[in-house]
Image 1 (tube, one colour):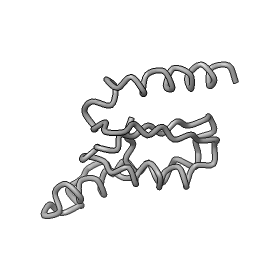
Image 2 (cartoon, rainbow, N blue to C red):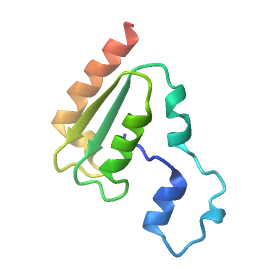
Image 3 (cartoon, rainbow, N blue to C red):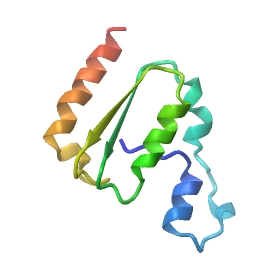
Length: 100
């Protein structure tokens, strides 16, 4: 999960010395999130050092669809899927979304 607002911004945070114009596909989630009509679950680990949790909060504020935020204490970008507090809420969200 751990969504990014913009891949250009994510790249600049990680590699500030690389010109942003080198990113071929900007992948602006922040520019399209308002078009999503289905419920959105933002899942983010508090230990994510690749994509800050602020990106999830930013996207949630821009969304027009119903949203929920699942914060997994201590989870990182690479292990969030292994945390027991992640799978059950994700499954519940998917079941609810499928029955709407």
